[in-house]
Amino acid sequence: MIEQKIAQFSETINDCLAMLASDRDVPSLYEPIRYVLDGKGKRIRPVLLMLVCEALNGQVKFAVQAAIAIEVFHNFTLVHDDIMDNDAIRRCRDTVHKRWDESIAILAGDGMMALAYEELLKTKSPHLERLVREMTRSVRIVCEGQAMDKNLEESNHFSLSLYLEMVRRKTAELIRVSSVCGAIIADADELQIQSAAIYAENIGVAFQIMDDLLEVRSDANQMGKSLGSDLSAGKKTFPMIVLKNKMKKDEFEKIMRKNQSPEIALSQRRDIFRNLCVQYDVFTDGEMLIQKLTDEGLGKIINFPEAGRKILMDFATFVMERKK
Image 1 (cartoon, rainbow, N blue to C red):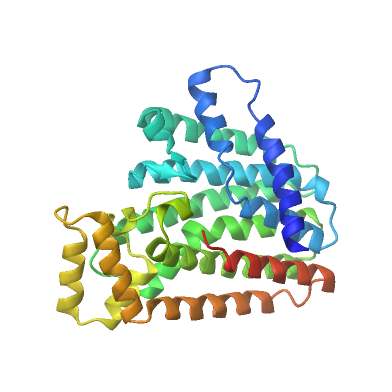
Image 2: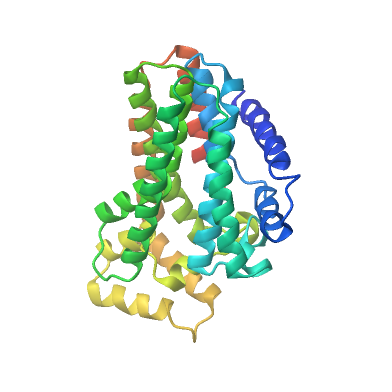
């Protein structure tokens, strides 16, 4: 049931994205934008927006433009994130700055931000002003999360609480606002809107923890993106933080120095790191936290209609059982 619903909404999103900017000139701007939007991502955020709207008995047809706006903005963040991390692969294809150059990628990202707002403003809702405020607030929060990520990358002082706060802003915020916008478009009451927010924020944090675990134990072909760049850059991911807390300080620092050494192949560094994660039960710890966050999020939507609550429970299960 949920797989069919997700496939249906994803198809709607992909069809709309294919039409977006299809008739614009200035190829140096719109060709890379079309390239990004044709990347066939997971579409988790726009699908969630539409699911929440439906779960609260709203008309999904009025949620499509906002869903497109969220997805375009999300892809903008990926373009700029790839530049900052110097990643070469995204969704099994060259990243924009590798296929073109950094200047084109930055410009394409800026253009996508404008397109996102153009789509959002097409939403037929008496609450359009609030939708715009929510989106704008999320733009700022995502930027804060990205800045926190870079700060942690350059710092030797990090903790699980700092990591979770960074993730809440950088990753979970767009998932949260997707859910909130879906509830607003459905004309939900304030309690349901706040419940939708907490549900999605928890799912968003759990999603990033899962991504961090997959970064270590999957392969690049399965994930469809560069793997190991987080390790090389010294990013403070969930596995790294758990290892820091469990290992002796000198042993952990020795491993970190080795894993940033250009003299050792990246694949070998990932193997060393993966073996440590197995040895210190990092994957088990991550899976337990993912389950805890998911359960807490699902507990917040008890005030949703029963059928809608079931859809969002199935969606959470679907997302957390992903392999890439």
